[in-house]
Image (cartoon, rainbow, N blue to C red; front, side, top):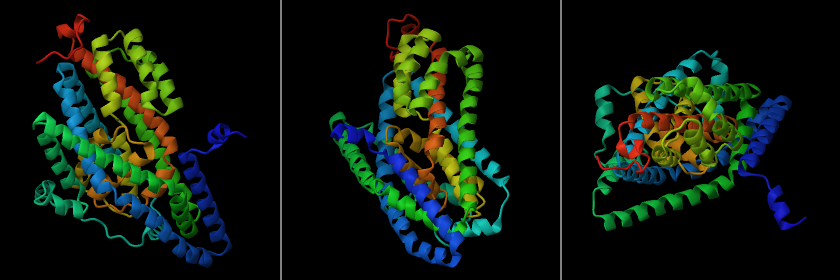
Length: 434
C-alpha cells in the first residue's frame, strides 16, 4: 500500500471521535451491567482524564474569543465601509442572527421542559459529569445591566466573565477601526496571530479528543447506563429540528422582506441546498449559490457577487441556534431554570460570537463558541466534550440552514437595492458611497 493510499485510508478527526464515543459508551454500559459498583469505581479513575482534556480546551477560550470578536468587528466594519450594498448586507446578517438567537432562546428551553424529568436520571447525569452544581441565581435587571460593562477588563477575563469581556472586545474592535491605518494593521496582525496561535493549541488538544471523549463517555455511561443514550438522542433530535425550523423561517422572511414568491425561491435554491447537505460546507456550496442567485432568480451580479461571499465569510445563521440549544440542554441536565436575563445575555452573545467564528474548523468552533455562551449564562461546561462528539449529524442540517439564509439575505438586499443605480444598471459593483 502506497503512502497516498494510507493517507486516504486514514480516518478523519470526526470519525475518530465518534468511534471513541461509541467505544466509551459500549464499555461503560457493559461494565455497568456486569458490576455496577466496579463501574462506578473505574469511572472515578477515568473521569479525571476527560476533565483534564476539557480544562486544556477551556484555557484557550478567553484569548481566542476576545481576539475573534476584535477581528470580527473589524471585518464587518471594513465590509460595511465599502458601500451601500455591503452595509445593507451587514444589517440583514445582524437582524437574522438576532432572530435566530431569540428563536432558539425561546424554543429550546420550552421544548426541553416538555421532556419527562426523571430526577434519578438527572442526578446521575450531574454526578457523572462533575458532581453537584448549584443552580445559577438569575441576577436582577439592575445588577445585570451594571455587569455588562466591566469596570476591569482584565479582571473580567481572569474571572471568565464572558459577556463583559465580549463587550470590552467590541469596544476595542470598533475603536481599532477608527485609528491610523498603519497602526491598525499592525494591531490586527497581532490579533490574527493570537487567533492562529490559539487555534494551533486547540488543534493539539483536539488531537487527543478521542481519549478525552472516551473517558467522558465511559464515565457517564458507567454511572448512568442506557438512559444516557436516550438523553443524547433527545439533544440530537431537538438540535436538528431547530436547525430545520430556522431554515423554514427563511421562507417566511423571503415572502415578507424579499418580496419573492416562495415556490419560485424554493425551486431555485434546491441545487445549492443539495450540495450543502452532501458536503456540509457553505464554501463548497458558494458556486451553486451564485448560480441559483444569478441564473435561476435573476438577481443583479453587483449584489450576488458581493453579498454571497460576504455571507460565507461573516454569516452563519444556525450557529446561535446551536449555542442556545447546547446551553438549554446543559441547564436541563443540571436542573437549572434559565431566567430571562440569562437567556437575553446568551442570545446576544451568541449572535456576536457567531460572526467572529466563521471560518474556524468545525471542532475548534464548537468548543470556542459554546463554552463562552454557557459560561456567560452561569452554566457548567463539562457536558460539552460529549456534545462535541455527536455534532456530526446536526451539522448537516446546520449547513442547509446557512446556505438557505445566505440566499435569503441576498434576496432581501436585492429588494433593498432596487433603486440603487449602480445595482440596477448592472455596471457598478454596488459599492457606491452613501
